[in-house]
Image 1 (tube, rainbow, N blue to C red):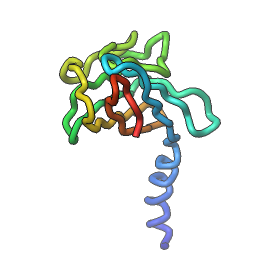
Image 2: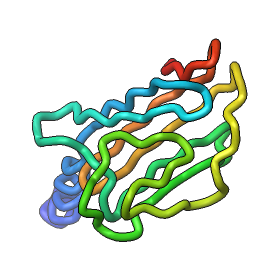
Image 3: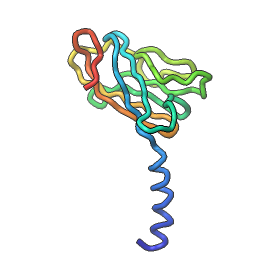
Image 4: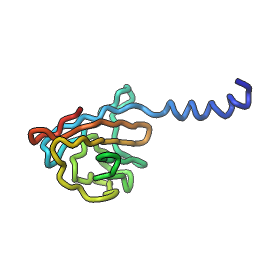
Length: 129
């Protein structure tokens, strides 16, 4: 690699290394599943903060999403489907009932972290796949 290539590649490698992984846990009743975020690195608790978002999709189509409108006093590590946390705003359609046996994807992004999980509704409960 020549010197110019290294100068261009170094910032991209550095910025790519700034993303920490987050485990997204899914639980709770079908009507209002809970999404909990646990950082997979030792750098503190994740939270949805500016710029940040949580998105639920079915077959790539957004069915519910939130994002932060401002930096909130209370930064959540748990979000309940259909409820917008303090400092957040709805980002797309309002929540609709989740159907049994349909596979959904949840993605969360925040300053310095991202995470995702697949889940479905079985026997009245949200279950991570």
